[in-house]
Length: 423
Ligand code: ADP
Image (cartoon, rainbow, N blue to C red; front, side):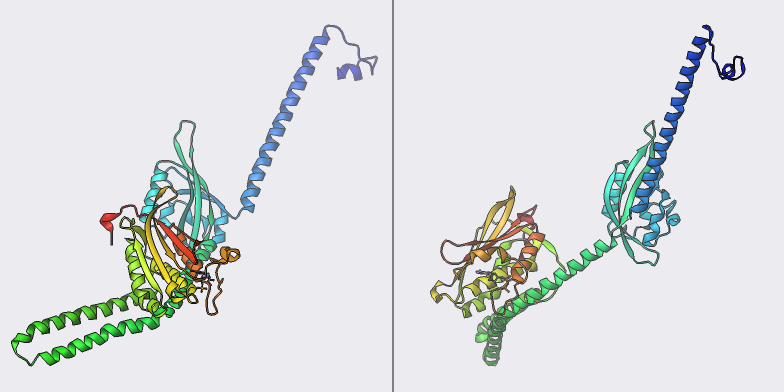
């Protein structure tokens, strides 16, 4: 058509013969088809380029790094971002995760489970483990991965992302240490209030030991008839000495800082120990303590010393609250009963006093750290007690009494196996 238009006279005119018309139409259609196809291809290539660029941008901006493993779970690719935590990415190629994790030995069960997940070609999320940075210091990583398969369903390996959570883990560790420190301080402070009575309590059996020993000395030179009396006196000596050392043991257990240790225990023993510890102090403050522990109180799983601390704190608070009420009214009742918490069996201990009671407006603040209405109070007792109970999976709460005073209660889930493991 162009040739005809430009070169065949008369030039600059187009005279189409009828036979050429279908040819021109076919040509125009073909040209249109080819043109639109290549435009489509161009836009598909552009979309692909843009999507790749977007992916690259995400990968670059994110602090996480990407990795790929082969069917044998060894790394085949690790992105450059890994250098940010002081690890050379190429050093990981060919290695499996557990080849360099430093907690494999300490937590074999966790790793066994992880390995089983990988062997089952299942996805995994937020798997946390410890490795070593370039300078050998601990680095905590969290990683998630997804298995990949080819068209025939053959496993190709995993693709995933990892991030460095060392700072968060360190903060968690510091918080835990601070909590333990604070718990220890409050325990010792509460203990300080009852220590004077201890000295007194310990002195009594010790004085008895001395008296009995003296009696033995006096009896020994006499004839063999007196031997029975000597035996009795010696029996008393043994009993008193054991009593004295048991008292000292209880104080030592409360005053020393030991790592939290959970065992299956009966709360009735915790009640008994705390009552023994405060008995003399209660007598000095003219407070009567009554305990009503139901025989079917389920055993719980907990740290004995921490639970003693909670109860000791509630009992001392109850005694404090009754400091100004009439002596005849100073009664503290510690109850233990079976209960249901979130649909499961639980053990509940409550401490009811007849003290000054609660200011309803301030009730929400009692459990806040440093909230105190006492001149020498620290205001940490209830805050620490609540966190201890919550760490045990339980609940600590307060209710005003119908009569004067308040009732503080805590409930703990029953231990999985009860009677046989009871301490
Ligand atoms: P502290 O005993 O050092 O003040 P706590 O956290 O143990 O710290 O108690 C906080 C506050 O809760 C107390 O100062 C008191 O006002 C209130 N409180 C605690 N127990 C009782 C109680 N049995 N009766 C009335 N008020 C109480």
